[in-house]
Length: 307
Image (tube, rainbow, N blue to C red; front, top):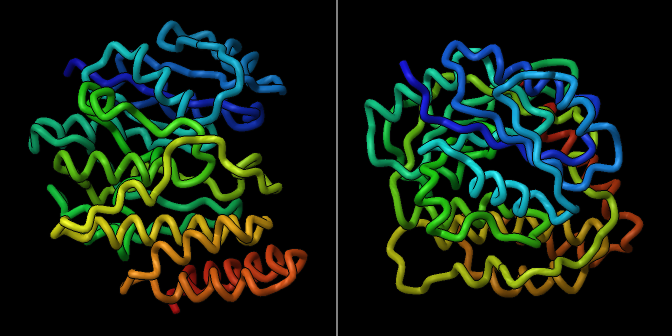
């Protein structure tokens, strides 16, 4: 079977993980058309690790640091495949990922995105992610209110559609993938396989910045709100925006978090997150991150134990 799928890997300071990530692509039972690695201004030896792999399938592109959305968009521009599979520089694919995506494309043609289930690697154990349990075209927004349908490393995009939508929102530091999924799922169908063929790393280095910096971007979740919509997309963007506001508040972005809480107060499905944002905003900044981290650790432990 000929593969018409390019692989897009944004890379920033992942010298400890990127070789293993690339090997997980190079050992696929269905090899990709190409692997495009966009090094987004790494300050470590990430690029050297990519070059050391020495595969003719791998193409390394260097650019100044512009953020993960800009790196993904560069790969979308450079790709030769009809489809582009996204993979972060610290995650892994099981060897059958691309074969499963190719099967989905053949079985359910015409979708804008194809994805599989995943496992979460916390450095000690693998835990199955909370995803849909059936194969086929899904109601993306309804499913995404309680489950994960698309995350970057599980998702393969129709390249032409992704580019026609303008790609990922450059300048957004958090939630850029959810912003893009919203625009895509309002335009095209999303197809899912419950086969867990991706390992998402919670233990990798450099997962997110620890210091709050206001975003310099024209893109906002508020702009996606559509009072005329009849689907669950407004609830989905409220969920994404309030989840982001929680992190922003913990890092000291009190005013930005408060604006999000006010705008998305219409939510019915994310009331708990809305209350957490407002509560966190009332606390001293120095308390917020430790409290949120402790809460998240407890939730993760309970989820792993099935409680």
